[in-house]
Image 1 (cartoon, helix red, strand yellow):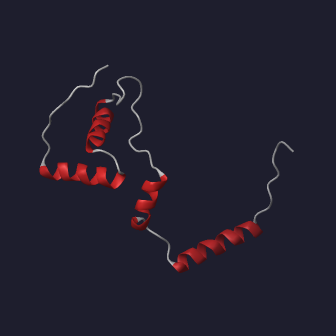
Image 2 (cartoon, rainbow, N blue to C red; image 1 turned 135 degrees about the vertical axis):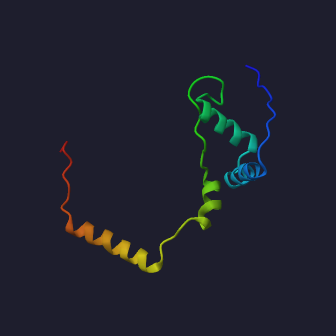
Length: 99
């Protein structure tokens, strides 16, 4: 099936939002719009079958986003580690049902 070209107008704010999202996720603006339209109308980006996932997260993309994600403080991390350690010692060992 041959692809068709479509020209559309977006508000300046929406066009900027598409550009920012595409840049942040390392994909082309046309891919963002194509997948959004496919999700909106329930179609597919490939022409038949279910719509493809909106985002494939690669290791490179995750590394680029890492600094913008929320992180635990040192105290929070210590509390979490302590809670995990306490759980390991206080919970009984589970015997697998197939043994």
